[in-house]
Image 1: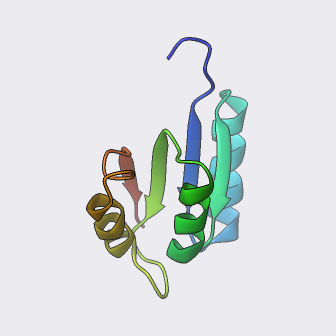
Image 2: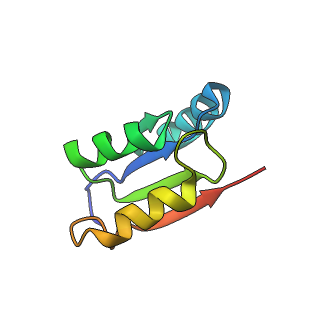
Length: 87
């Protein structure tokens, strides 16, 4: 991607996990944003689509798979690469 900084959105309801991933990816030069729920993730993605999404499987209110279904239905977000995280 040349000199462009890779943007990552990390979605997890556990703040300790968010902090750990944000620290590690930030140290490697990526622009990291975080969301603690599927609803918050949808807002962040609308604000600025990330290059990649790291997504927790199990979250209250909207699971990771449900968020993926919503993203894949929208042509604007359908192609965002997603890596699922799970315990």
